[in-house]
Length: 287
Image 1 (tube, rainbow, N blue to C red):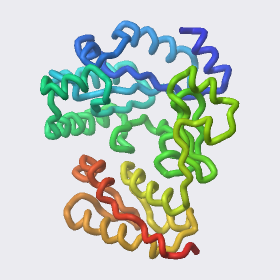
Image 2: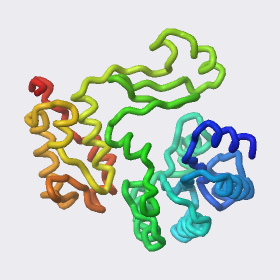
Image 3: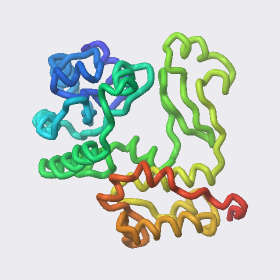
Image 4: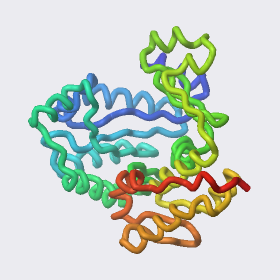
């Protein structure tokens, strides 16, 4: 509503993301969302006219029964609204949801080849309307890439405010309580008890995450730059270096001006590649 929008703007928020998910009322119901398509359009008009510097739309694909034509229709309707940024995510089945129950009963199934075709359609469709892909699931008009996203994927520092928000600061990765009442009760406690999750991280751990998440970006990663950023010896990446070279040999990536980048086939498999990423040689001393 307008009061919430005004509060965001007065609080300094300059970018807002709307979780649209789909413009198809049938699939909205399948996804178990509480809002309807009409409320999406009302909210978007309110936000777009409010004066935010950037507006993003989140879309989900892979709903039970959804076809490629349905997905292209969602993409077309999103483009027609002229947002600055579009994020597209494959449906995941979270526990304690109606969809997860259907999956458990065999009423719906996961089809990786079908999911791949949805990814490929977005990769081909959105750039024709000026939305350049800069990460596996994210597209932006020129100069409108999400600075928060880029900062996070590069494993810099960030602070998350409010229930369920995550932060990475001073070698600590933490997550606020998701439950609003629980979050409120813990605000004044000594840390780390005030957070639902609290993990101390060393430079080497953050550097490895910088490789994993950096490969999701089209621009890829530069191991030499990551070493310098986290004050690590290049030899700590020896196994990862071999692994990235192997990806190139297998036709999943390339090396351009010192940057390792995944190609389209590699980006399609980025989650599997992340799981196979070797550990760092922790015995190598920092420089």
